[in-house]
Length: 236
Image (cartoon, rainbow, N blue to C red; front, side, top):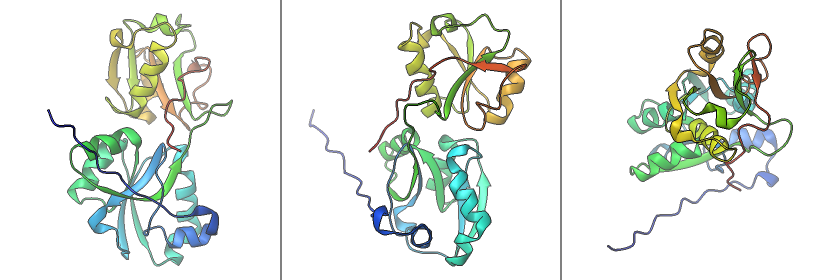
């Protein structure tokens, strides 16, 4: 079998040379991709007046929503119509179909789409997750749950926002590297805003999420497993 050569995606705005306002004003001309990114089809990469943008209501996108609230996009001549979606796995197909001009996504969804033949222009830096006490990822169990380790998740039901995507990969990585077996976990799909209720009602045993759906889930609803999940997604 002949070896296949994957085409390299080239990206690049020199963020060090741009002010924040200049960056927003040139948002359609280039960028970089990290754990999350704003992207659009290559053939739609020219400046447009009206834009359909697919997003998620998560902490990673706070700068985007602040910029929208402050009128930065309007000042740059952009009419932004925002559609909140369940995750990158849903945003990528909408982008490919033309329903969206720009979409927020993650490296897993982007890579899956690229393997299917869809090309992207990365236009803006997303979010880089680093090790530390202020991690945006979290793995929650009920406050009265007997589960105290990854091993005890074997045979349990764990929710993520979309299956076969970045959150499931992160949670599975943590489970497998902390004494558990992710192949023995029953994975189910639950939107981030509905996870706490599912945990309280005992429909699930645990869930993996990002802010603001981590720190907001405390007693009497749930507790965060220490150092979970591992931070595995880095593109620098």
